Each structure stands twice: as C-alpha cells, then as structure tokens.
Image (cartoon, rainbow, N blue to C red; front, side, top):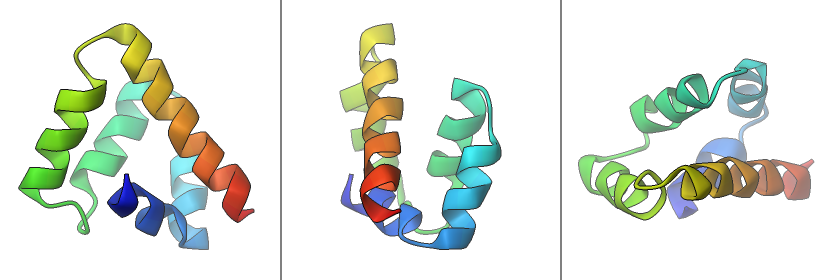
Length: 70
C-alpha cells in the first residue's frame, strides 16, 4: 500500500483515479502505474483480489488514503 499511497499523493493522479467509475478501471490504473513494479502488483493481487470482500476493502483503503491527503 505504500506505493499506492505514493501514487495518490500526486493531485494529478488522484484526479485521474477519481474519474474512474468501475472497480476494474481503478484496479487497472493502480496496477499499470509506472511506480508499481511486478512484486508490488503481485502482493496487491494476493492480498486483495482473491475475494470480492477484499476487493471492496482495497477500494475503501485507497479512498481513505485520498481523504487523508485531501
């Protein structure tokens, strides 16, 4: 999550992320961001993408990060 936090610290990146409406768009944005390396993506997938509850938790966590920064 530290890399996700680094992404969201940028006002431009936050704005881009907030424009997405679906889970898949948000996830693709995070996974394909240049700051994310293969290991970070695999850890993110392993922790959050195995169940739908965890997917929702991922989105809530990112939104909490954004709220704290704003």
